[in-house]
Image: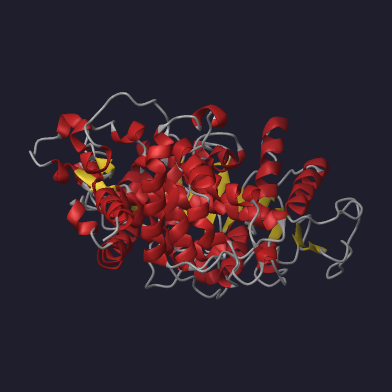
Length: 547
């Protein structure tokens, strides 16, 4: 056996002892440190399995092997000694030798980006280089968009003084381990070459989607109750571990998190959703019968208070879901009080959006959701920690409609198939706040229904316009409700939605009187105005698929 082959074998073996998750030092009791940590290889495969199995992961348009490979690279920065030294009892002496504190402090997400973008670029060629046509190879800047997405899985993009950080001698020592780590993952997933994205918009959309999915999968894959720690021997064969351990545990974890696959029921009229409505109002009649446009839709429903706009909007959302253009719904309201009231209304109706065999989650999303007794009473405890959030007399509630993992955090609550919350919970998806990508992942593929859309000041109107622009760009539909919406605000929100779809604006949609069925909004988008009864009016706009 050559020296080179022996060194390669040693690095492969040593990688099993690098930890990815570990107990805090004050909880370490066993004498065998292997029982106190979860190998890094095991952790990244756990997270990759979750990403592959999560409903909606197909929206990224990637092969599961490509997706698994990309997501598994998210924690490659944990190979660095600066991370491994955080838990001395788990120090991988098999690869790094004797323990030492003399390593420069750094963030593993930033180190991960540098390893992927700079030190391990050649090792990742099988993902990007087309053997038949060099013109289909990826540019370095395009690759970096993907590395930013997977490395920035702690709520914000990885950042540091890149040129200065590259000078750390630890990189030259760890780079061979990182390259071998990549080879192990390539063997597990055997991904085909990633297709080249000719549209910058498509690549940018994939970057946002990948960042959100990686965040979501990492949060689930990091739960020790769902992914018990294993010894280094368990990942001696990484492929076997992935198929026989990571995937089965990921499937169970997704179900326990309340994110299992659901099937939308076919639309069978407003009476199916709301049995108490025997005679639909004019606006309700229109919204259950009017022809909806193809692709992402913006629907604006204006009518007087008490006319049944909310039910009409839910009918519209169900029709969009039933036609395959959405998989869920988030209802945004101006205050916690109105959100609580809407939650009470939806408890009776939301299951009818789905087939009886499905177990959709309904979550309340605002800063005081855990003080709402109705919401607390239907939370399902999913592990021992969750029980601390649920009173004993409610732990066995007959009607369980939300896992505690979703319900105890407003950011995760947006991931539920149906959510109700304050508008700020959705707006933070487009603001520079931590874990904005998690909120984006929660809203992706859903209909966003904004009630009382007139009840916001100029600053929040700009934020709402940004939300509509982003949601449209990601292929989502939006429904706006108001009794007193001004023409200027209507135009601003409509224009924002058009901008997200990259539609060239032709004239002013709001100021033109468009008869029913006419299409006068240019060749790529059409608008209709439907007169119901009295002063009821419903506007919708449409566009083609972004792809």
